[in-house]
Structures are given as C-alpha cells and as structure tokens.
Image (cartoon, rainbow, N blue to C red):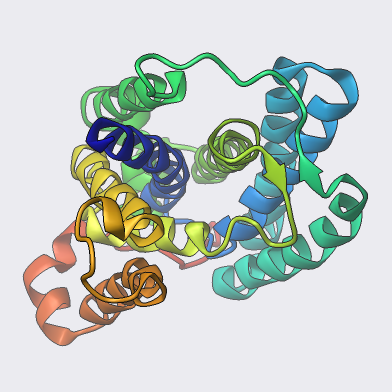
Length: 292
C-alpha cells in the first residue's frame, strides 16, 4: 500500500516535471508564459478527444504536442514579434483554454474507455522519460552552443544580437518547444495519470508548475526534486490517511500544495530573495526586445 502511494506520487511528479520544464525552457530565453495551465488544458482535451475517437494513444499525444506547439507559436507572435505584455498574453491563453476546452470537451465527459498504458511496478513509463528529459535539458542548456544562445537571449538580448545570435529565432524555437511540452504534459494527465475528462480537470497544476520554475532557480536538476516534492504533496492531499491517519481533514490537505505554491511566489517577490538569489533569474525575463 505504501509503495502504491509513492508510485502515484512519482507519477504525479511526472506531470509537474514536464510542465515546469517546458516553462523553464521558455523563461531561460526570456519569455514568460503564465498561461501554462491553459496550454495544458488544450493538450489534455485535444489529446483525450483524438485518442478516444481513433483508439490510438500515439495520435492523442501527437495532437496534444501539435496544439501545444501552435499555442506556443501564437504566444511567441504576440510576445516576441509584436512585443506585447507577456503576462497579459499568458493570461489570455489561460482564459481561452479554460473556456474553450470546457465547450469542446463537454461531449466527451467521462472515462477514456481504453486499455491503460502499461506501467513498470506501478510507475508510468513517462516518469523515466521525464528524468531523461531533465538530464538532456540540463546538458543542452549548460554544455552546448544552443544552450548558450538560449541563455544569452534570456540574459542580454542586445549583446547576444551583437554577438551574431538571432534573438527572435532563438526565442521562437524556445517558446514553440515549450508549448509542445506543455501540451504533452496535459496529455500525460488525461491519457495516463487520470484518464477521465471533466470540466477544468487540470485543477491548478499549471500554476504549481509555474511556481516550480522559480522554486528551482531555473535549474532543471533542482526542478526535478521540486516536482517530486509537489507530486508527493499532491498525492498526500488525496490520500492523507495512508501516511498520516487522523491528522487533519482531507479537505485541509487538499489546500497544502496551493498554500505552498502561494508561499513560494510570495518569497520570490521579496527584496531579500531578489538580492540573494536574483542572479539565477534571467535578466531579460518578460521584457520584449526590439532590434536596434
């Protein structure tokens, strides 16, 4: 029973890993997307509909990746090409995802009705994919010329441009990749973790993933640890009696992941944090760039 709890916790952490890693990639290039939950909703809903309609998990995941990439491209167009406010653009994505997926997904309310994806001792195969992706992302960002370009346009795009780096192209590559991973994260939730479609079934996971990026100091390896922590907290909020029987109500436990998320975001906004840890944050994060 205890292993089942930990396996479910790690499976939950997988979704946080993919979602937070997608946001981290975009932010390292200087583009903030607070609409991550909206993109996950699109990926989860479109992936669910396509998989159920075709009977193919592969097509469902591909549909989620494609819609995520398209939304990433749109976010890039408004934020990079037009130089719009990235927070406003992201909130627009979230609101659109919240409303539109409720409309198009309503006829599909209920279980997926397909044979479950095989697991490995209770662990989703995507858990292992997530760990591999964390390592690959860390290596790319810290050890390759592509990673250097991404980090450069996120720190000082003017200097990067002078150095011969195409800021616009690099940022587009980052936000499209970011969107694809967001859509994929949503599909993992709806096709593997909890294959039942319902209204607004992502339930704030995207905002937790957003907080995880700040929690990790924009470091993929720390992000993995944070994802496992929040995955465990989430599972604990669902089944507290398995670990702490009789300690507080399950409804109070349900608030714990979100309370910690709010606490993390509040900590990030303090002067102490910006003074002590501000160097970890990409200097040009959220700032549009106009080529001189």
